[in-house]
Amino acid sequence: MNKNIGTHQFKKRFGQNFLIDENILNKIINYSKADKETLVIEVGVGSGNLTKKIAGIAKHVVGYEIDLTLKPILNEVLKEDMNVTLIFDDFLKRDLKKDIDKIECNQIFVIANLPYYITTPIITKFIEEDIDIDKMIIMVQKEVGERLNAKPNTKNYNSLTVFINYFFDVTKLFDVSKNVFIPKPNVDSAVIQLKKKEKREYLRNKQLFFKLIRDAFQYKRKTIKNNLKDYDLNIIEGVLSKYNLDLSARAEQITIEQFIDIANNLK
Image (cartoon, rainbow, N blue to C red; front, side, top):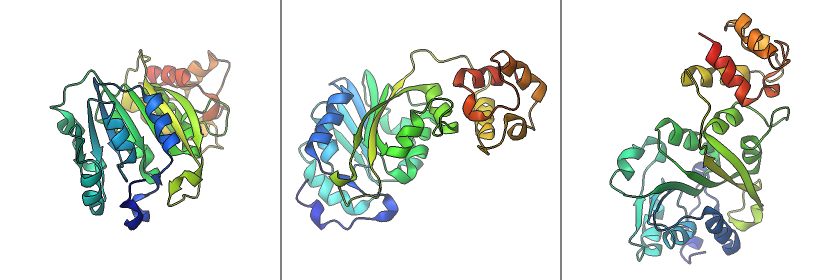
């Protein structure tokens, strides 16, 4: 931990829990396999502990930090790292393409201990702004990691699972105890890898697909017939029958490929 962080007034509203375990930091770096051709985006720079390690292996790091009171601390910690660009602003309000436009690289990674209260909006922003992310190595709340990596017919499988797994292959790398943070959070964490799919399934209408999965999972205990009553149920039933399913199925029984098939058949 850098010596100045001990005096920092931690802000709950920003979800500040700084990782202080050297071994965990090194494991994240080793799993990332970033190199001198990699642009790394970090959301939630915090203490700068992870940023400094990334700077040692990557071509360039663009780090976002919303807490302006960390500016003097981070400027001191990272003063020798000329390949780091710090942006003190709300990540969710930034134009990402503009921020990274002039940085040449062969691949773009996201490596970050994400603020838990906005994990999903952060990942979604990268997707919606069409940033060509090759890989994300991110620390998230353990429960969120389990959702992202869930399989059909399990309690953690939900619309977020389907949405993220359309774009990325998800792998859980390792769990992280809440005891290696300052201040200590209430929950344990997990480091997961999201790797860009080499080939995505064809989707006729992405917006329809994303709306379909949101609606299908809207009420988890209800059947497809009830959750998707505003859609053409004859078409949906026809597709489901190919997989030995019917309208009495629940969303968690339906695979990503089956949802894609349904979406591609809907008008």
